[in-house]
Each structure stands twice: as C-alpha cells, then as structure tokens.
Image (cartoon, rainbow, N blue to C red):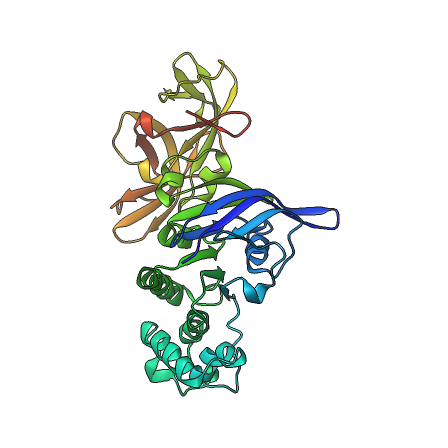
Length: 356
C-alpha cells in the first residue's frame, strides 16, 4: 500500500487549462473516487498520476518520492481501463501473466501470483479460456487480475464498468468493493456515476472544470454539500431546487404562488429580498411534517416499496421529485402536499455557496 500527495497539480494542452491546481492527499489503503461531469478533468488527472500524461505544473508524490518526471513503468502503479484490452489469442492465464513474463520474472513466481489472483477473483475454472469465451464481467475480472499480479502500490481504475449492462455493473461494483477489502489496496477510481461513487468510496473527490469542488466521505458530501454543484451532483434522485428570498423569518417561494415556509437555522442570514436557492432532498419530502409545499402530480413512478413522485409547483415549469415509502395510491393530476421539516432545507446564496 502506498499514499499519494498532489500539490497544485495542473495540466494544459496549449492554451487550454484542463487541470487547474489540484491539491489532494490519499492515505494508504484508501478508496478514492473521482466524480464529475464529462470534461471536468477526472480522467486526465488519473492519467497524470499513472504517468500517461505529462504534468504541466505542481508536484505529484507517491509515497515519499516525487514522480513528476518518473516513467510510468517505474511508478509502482497498475491501471484498469474502460476497455478490457485483453489479447484475444491468449488464454486467461496467459493474459494475466503477460506483463510479468515481459518483465522477466521466473515462471514459478508468475504461476503463483496468477493462481492467487485467479482464486481471489473466482477465475480458477476459466484459466484456459480465450477472451471470446468469456462474459463481459469475466473479461473485466481478467483485466483486474492482470493488475493484481503486478502487486502495485496503487490501483487506478478508469470507468471500468462503463461497458457492462446494469445488472453486471451492480455485481462488479460489489466485487470491486470485496477486492478492496481483501487486498487493503490504495485505489483511485474514476466514474461519472455518482451511485458508484457513493457505494464504493472512502473519499469522494467532486471535480468541475479542472478543480476540486469538494472532497470527503460519501455521507459527508450528501449531508453537508458546500455548494449548489455538489448538492445537485451527489444524490439520486438529485436534490430539488427552488428560487426564493427571505422575508423576516420566512422564505418566500414565487414559484409556489408566493407560498412561505420557515427559515432553516443558519448563522449568516441573507438580506431580505436577496435571491436564494432552496434545496430539498427527495428523500425528506413525505406526507407529514412541519412545512408544506402545494404541488400537482405530473408523473408517478411506482418502484415497489418506494414511489417517485414528480410534482409541479403552481407557477413553475419544472417538477420537484419526492421519494416516498409506499405511495401506491398516488395518481397523475392529484394535488400533492409535500411535507418536510424546516431543518431539512438547504440554502444557497447568489454565488452558489451554501449558507450555514
């Protein structure tokens, strides 16, 4: 296991700045997930750590060693890509041991490492098959096994589940979590899927436009986002947002016909009339509580034990989403009183930063 330190790390392609002064500490054995929208710089940052992209500025350390100019092959890192990149003419055993043979490792040592990795990944019975004889999930496990046998200090995963169907994604997500627990390895994982991030990570790093917006544990980011972007990105379904302003100790919501709700407890009160954004998680909206918004149901999604209600305020073109336990009696066109507690309200200022 190995730690990583990024200090003011930057990357430019000509006049275009892609990664803009990233500072990050990854401790030994930590599972860190980079998330963000397409083009935010997460894959570029991963490739800089791997040594596949040059570093324009700042410093990268793996353990205590500066790595800016060190060749990728000497960084003690193994990378698993979105594409499996398996040799089609080689067996599972040969694919997993290829890099070790190329490095000149003795055959007996290669065989032991490959066998150990195969046992961990439940590939032992598939060792003589070719890639075309494997399912997508099995091919991904072979790609991961090829990384494991190198016994790297750090594993890098670049959207490894993107090519799998929904059921396999869930299965492989569990397998990767079990693998991290078994190996105790330091892992940096890139995904655009915030559900993957929430379920796998010890620490999530949310990136936008080449910068870190916020980092922390999954529940920290869910419960205590620093700004509108993080609040909207972390959580499924995403947080609801309404425009409003303060009037005394109440919040006025024009989209709801000027309806008023209580102000949450914040230390830095905004000026009266100053534009605010009100945030509500779908999970806090039910049919009981101290505050209420009058809505009209547009769409109902019955998911069994849970119902997603898409309902519209009177003077708004956008829907709010409520995640309700049960709710099987709800129908399109009904009036829906969305009840919630005042302390579940998030407030964001004109600049998008959270008011606490």
